Image (tube, rainbow, N blue to C red; front, side, top):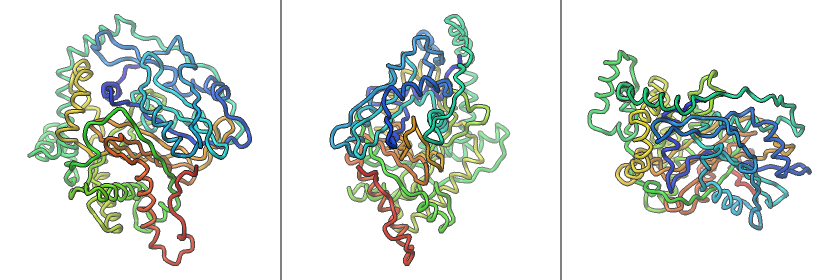
Amino acid sequence: MRQLTALDAQFLNAESATTSAHVAGLAILDPLGGVLDRETLAALLRERMHLSPALGLRLSEVPFGLDHPYWEPDPAFDLANHLFETEVAAPGGEYQLADAVARIHAGQLDRTRPLWEMHLLRGLTGGRVAVYTKVHHAAIDGVSGAETLAALLDLSPEPRVIDVTPPPAERGPGLAGMLYGAAVRTAAHPVRALGSLARAAGELDAIPLAAGLPGARQIAQAARLVAGDRRPRPELPGLMAPRTPFNGPISAERRLSFCSVPLKDVKDVAKRHGMSVNDVVMALCAGALRTWLRDRDALPEEPLIAAVPVAVRTAGARQLVGNHISAMVTPLATNVADRHARLHATRSMMRAAKRRFAAASSSWLHELCSLLPPPVTRLASPAIFRLAAVACPPINLIISNVPGPRFPLYLCGARVLSYYPISVLTDLSGGVNITCFSYDGMLDFGVVACPERLDDVWSLPRHLRAALDELLDERVGDELGDGVGVDLVSG
């Protein structure tokens, strides 16, 4: 059995009555004249579950929470506890689908079973169906989530042949081994915590909230010198998150919206202005958030602060359960009114953040999660998150861009039309999360929000459309520019 890391366990610790820490995706499918039903999905899962280790493992808790849990095979696994079917309310359009998925997304996963669910949603317009899948963030990150999805999908309507040989069963440490390991790690924790504190201190000026403390840059430089790290670090702009309606304690309710952006248009903008696709994505988000805040007289003078998850998974870790991620923190140019100035400000901010991230240790997020002993972290995390949301939120929101395939994929013979990622909300990270996934010539955006923080979640896709249209309008005389922008999912 593999033990959860401090970062993996933190996603468990973050859960509370108002926070569910799973990541999810919503696939819209065209059955292509066939039938996609629960029985067909069940047969596929039984055949391919072994390709994704996270789907067959459950948590094995250490007594009294003395240490981080372990992953163990579920000896009583029953697919009926994980695969469900739901009828979307009439008329089966995008709003009804989003409402149905939002209710499912708000519910927490059962920790006595493998931490995932799949829901088949029927009754959509045009004969389409949808499949919503959620997996706990303790088990997967964005990259491993995409790999889990890929295990179930095919390159053509004809399913590929899969070797169904199950992997060898893993033997765990047993109760005595867990307690012995907990005792050893508890005794050694003060030393490990000092090491984590020293390594985190070396990046103090790049950690949100901490970067705004007096002397943060000088402390970070001193910590790096003591550790023998003399690599220069590019300076970052201010990382103090301003007050916005997005930040504050969240409720248990969720709202969801989604839209698809033609990737070609985004690439055209990126090429014209000498930047990356991800830079344009960040600029679109900055423009959409600026418009939302301005319309409510809530636009701060300072730029919003966003955390951007970054995969640090190595080739040897591809089959491991858990998280191999860090976070790049950057300002958003929400304080810049002109569209072109905002675009170029975004490029400058992202370049500075990328240079700093490349030069710095990518483990600071893990080091922060390792500072306190597991029993203390488990009890204190929800309260710390809620207190920070009230007193001084470290960031305003999370924005994530997950790369996907450029070609169509199929599930049980049905073509995947779109795939909308749906992520996590916490008191600490804010009441709105924007995630996009590149697929088959499109960028599919999923927006999840707490209705007490953002009451009209469908406004953000409209603002994303307007932000892209503004950048496309400069193609005067280009016949391809007329009428090309962002298409909301029809329904």
